[in-house]
Length: 444
Image (cartoon, rainbow, N blue to C red; front, side):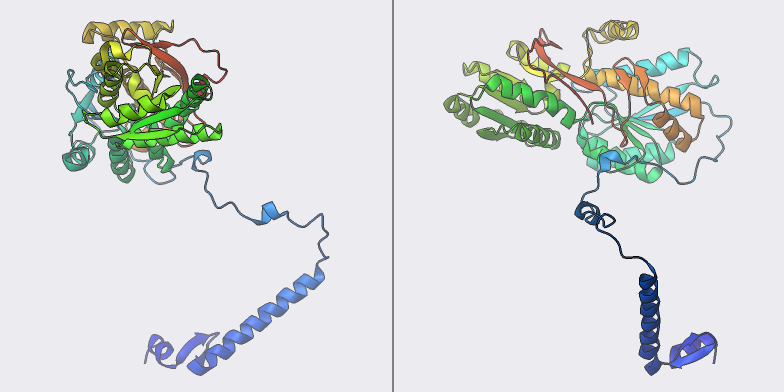
């Protein structure tokens, strides 16, 4: 019989002897007694702790929460020593989003991203090898979009991913790139939960919903001046995330909306919501919805003759909203995600190029797409063709100066860019005169 068979049938071996099964409990009790005795002797040798030495109740009770925003997402795995491939004809970068310049909400993003690639190639690419942008998109991202992103990552061997025109698509790319260990720069989503997953591969350039809410909430409260406040929000993912942050910020100021009305994305009849607003006669109205739904609602307000001051989310800073809403958009308060009228020469050159290409001024999503691609190309130039080192270089470029301003990563990879309050005039979001001291916020 083998030693293993002996242990299985008779008991356990300990220090060369075999203890029968009935003796196990005796051995265990003996060990506990010996350890307890050692502990007692050790405690007896130590002086008694004074009241000053005893830990405070706060120190004794660990926090039940994990502060993800204060913990830097770090990749400590392998891959940094992988040598770059040889004899590449092109350096491929993945783009998740529509590649149609005429797409109503993301066409300008695509054009801005391709502009950054064209500029890099005119400057010589990477040691003479040109960059190439490979795009994939589906209006049903969680259907065929997952498959297409996977093909870009594994079949086309892209070195990083950029894009995602909204929160759900950013979450999709994040899940794939986290498994593939591939850098991803999100350039349109304001949903902070993608970064709070503590995935070290995602970097978000657009200010997050909580930073936007810290600007909107005090402005809404000041405008209402103690009168009723009505909140209208759509039921899509991005609107739910954004309105949640707004309600939190209002609550912190002991401000509670008298009504919170929901609208379905794509709805055309707002008669019930409009009647509630008419009866409430609020001092301010917050509208959190996509660009199309926001445009329809402000037009419905105007047609109903209601002149309540309207405050909107980041989608009201998009060009598509202004195009659809027309004159009804005038006077709407919305966050300024970047300063269209800054005097930076790079920004002016970028705006001129965009106007020549698209016939209109770019909104913040286009500018952040340009910065995301430009930052990534610089990171590739510094790190070489190694995915992990490219991720490290992106993190190391914190403080990078782009067209949108200084891009600085917080521990989760979220840009801490500033947000200010603006007003829609002639299709653009321009600085709004405001006497409140709470008109500027930074992502924490």
